[in-house]
Length: 348
Image 1 (cartoon, helix red, strand yellow):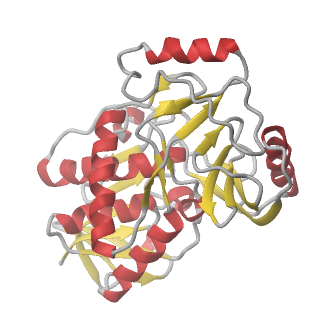
Image 2 (cartoon, one colour):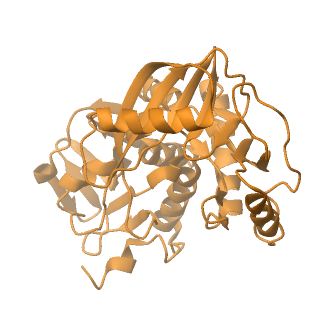
C-alpha cells in the first residue's frame, strides 16, 4: 500500500510529493497535464506586497522553508532552479520615495526593504526618482522545475499520465482504493482543475487568468527584476519575461489579443527601446476570494485531502503549505486557521 496518491504535478503537487519523499514515504503522482499555470508562472518570490507596502503573511517562515526546499531540489536534480535576484520598485515621484522610507521603518518590513535609493541608470529606462530595492527576492524557473521533477518521477516509476476518474475512488477502512492502487491518503493538488472535483466543489476557488510575454530587447540592459505596473524579468540572451495580466472573467488558458495589447502598452510606458514578442502564454491561477490557500482534510473523508489555491505566490507558498499539510496528516499538527479549509465549514 502506498502512503500517498497525489493528483496534480504543478507547484502544489510536486511540493507535497517531495516533502513526502524526504520523509521516507511512498508516493505515486497522477496528472493529465491539463493545467499549465505553474509552468508559465513568473516564478517570482517577494516577501512584500508592494501595492500596499505590507508584509506577505508569515513571510519569514515561508522563505525559510522555501529556501531549504529548493536548495535540496537543486542538489537532487543537479540543476539550478532558484535565482536570487533583486527586485527593484521604480519610483515615479518624491512622494513615492517618502512612502517607501515610511514603510521601511516598520518592524515587520525592515528586513525586506532597503533604505538606500538605487540611482543606477539602466539603459532604455527613464528613472529620475530612482528605485527601491526589495531584499530576499528572486525567481524559480518553474517550467524547468516541473520538467526535471516530472522526469525524475518517471525514471523512478512514480508518475502516471492520465486523467483522474473520481467515480472510481473508494474510501476504505485504512485509506483509499483507486483502480488497482491502494494508498493511505490521496492529495488533490489540481489547481484550477479542482472545479471538476466532486469532493471539494463547494470550496470558493475562483481562477484568475494571467497572460505573460517573452520579449527580445537587445538594448534593454537589465540585470534585476523590475516591478512597476508589470514585472520585467531578465532571462539572459536579451530575453525578458513580462507579466502579468489579471482577468477574473475569462477562465480559458488561451492567450488573447487584449491581454497581449495590455502588456505591450505597459511595457512601452516603462522602456524606451524597441522589442520583439517571442512568445505569448496564458494560464488560470488557482485563486481564492480571501487570498489564502486551501489546505486540509475533507470533513467526511479522513483519507481525502486538498492542497490548492496557491494563487500568484505558488513558489513561496508551495513548500510551506505542503509541509504544513504533511505534518497535519502524519503528526496531527494543527493547520493555521487562515489556510485550513475548515474556515469554510459553516458555509459548507
